[in-house]
Length: 68
Ligand SMILES: [Zn+2]
Image (cartoon, rainbow, N blue to C red):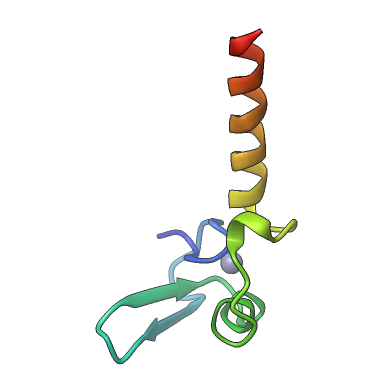
């Protein structure tokens, strides 16, 4: 199970499961991630400390390299 926001793995017995009214379920590794997603409406791809941000950045780099 990975964090919906930052993409990090959540160990068993830890983390927060959040069910929205529309039926979608989110998993958060910490209250920090939960707050960022729900209160601040941050996008993981634009938030520097998430794993998803770094993965996306690397992907972009690889793309650029393959073009050259
Ligand atoms: Zn997280």
